[in-house]
Length: 105
Image 1 (cartoon, one colour):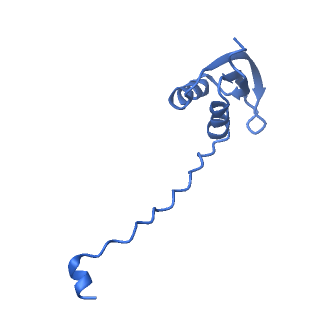
Image 2: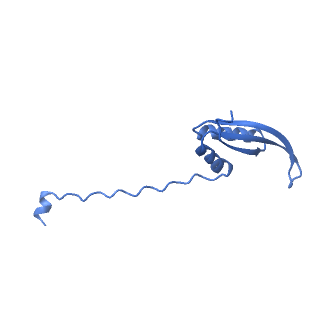
């Protein structure tokens, strides 16, 4: 299975809901092959509140570099896609003069 997927990233997710959101984003935005592998779960303590929470460790694998980079920049880092600059307007050829324009010149 790993031969199909050349690009991978491992994330810590706070719960099943975050994993479902990531899967939904991938289904909507990724064109090539992808896979998800559940690596395990651990308990972490939140430094601010002191509460314990479950953290899921998940590996996302992609067959295309473009898909991997898009997932990493747009989903993981939260950056919006860079808009490509609009193509410059095409310059129209000069309009030919009609018969009356030639007469009144």
